[in-house]
Amino acid sequence: MSEEHKNLTFYEKLSEKIESKSLKFILFTTLAVLIGGLVEIPPFFLMGSVQKIESVKPYNALELAGRDAYQQEGCFYCHTQVIRPFKWETDRWDRNREYGPEPFSKAGEFVYEHPFLWGSKRTGPDLSHEASLNNNASWHRAHLMNPRETTPGSVMPAYPWLFESKLDAAEVKSHMRALQTVGVPYTQTDMDAADELVKGKTQGDALIAYILKLGRDTMVVK
Image (cartoon, rainbow, N blue to C red; front, top):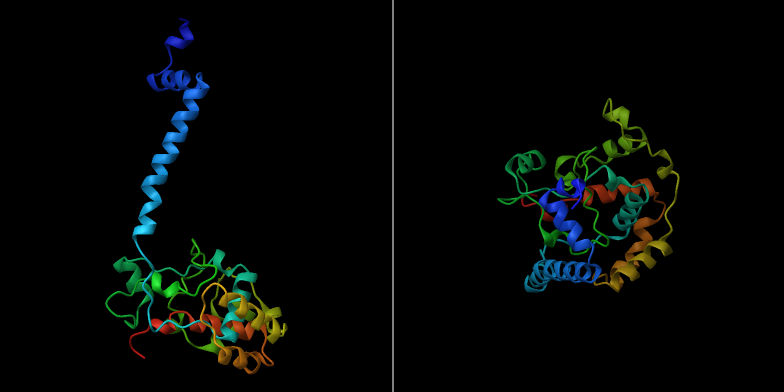
């Protein structure tokens, strides 16, 4: 046995021993993956379906177009939409106490979300309860046009061009029909209302409508 081999730690020797026997290594690796899968996957099937919240409704045509703009501009990279079940967090994002005894995010709030836009970073504030925290459409318009005007020192980019880009009703209705196929319960009435809702509106108008929808359906105090 070489001097170099003697100096190896127990784990290094064990690793060397396993890796030198390729067949055993493959078997052990496969076994580890299978065990991990058995631990993580079956619980999802045992949980059952997500309990819906009756007050949560699908986005209307204008709000859906705003959600598309939100995705288009990558807003979810800097804004989360998930309030965790910690008192310091619920106190911060439910200052007006409008979301009942459990003001954190629940699975039922996201049943019509395709895809989820939870985000994982808070360069900007969480927007889950924006309908409660700031429902001033004029403020949001000014903020999107020039964030520094409403929030000095903000690092958020300006989005003035969104208020120059007109919405296409046919495109919005096509998206609504696509969402129907994955279970979003849009009706013919919703489709018929789309033309009037988006008529003359811009992506900026739609984005504001989307932002003001966030948290609105789960507010307890109206």
